[in-house]
Amino acid sequence: MNISRTNRPLLGLFDNDSTGRAEFERLKNIKILPDTIFRQIGHKGGVFAGTLDMPNHLNDVSQTFQNMGLSLPLPIEYMFHAEILNLAIEQNVLELRSRTTRFADNELPFQINASEHLGQYVPADMQYLVQKLTDASKISFADWVCDRESEDFDVFTVLFESLAEVLE
Image (cartoon, rainbow, N blue to C red; front, side, top):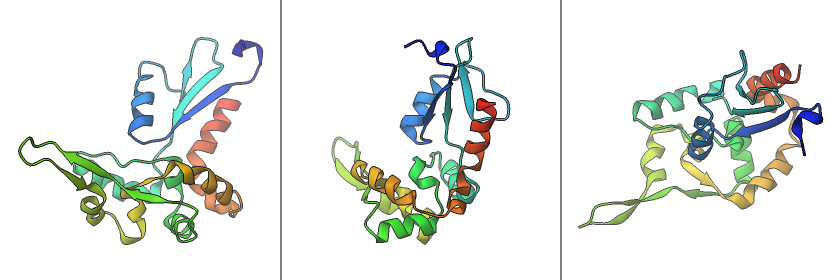
């Protein structure tokens, strides 16, 4: 299908986690549309790619991670406020697992629970930020969150404003 013939823009949105940032970084030489989170791909302007912007309520945690030389992983599910995410966890809508990594010492190799270590730098009500979502729970969360009040989606203001700019 030739996108330029549809008269509708094609939009791609990357999570602001390591995979999403790496993919979006591949587009670093492509111009960013002013006042948006999107890059315009191609000269005809019908294809756009963006990445999630860090919501204000996570700025302090993000800064703490940056001070340690780390980037806070931000899948779209973690954009929501802690109250919503903790309710979803309590209701078994979101399933989390610890982030583990292998310590690469040839003489003493072992697994490290990164969630336990990093949890000390995150507020108690945001411990999910240092854990990994199971892929299986992402769809159930998407279904569940659709029934939330519209003000629960205020964390997407930058995204919505950017979309409005692109679709103008």
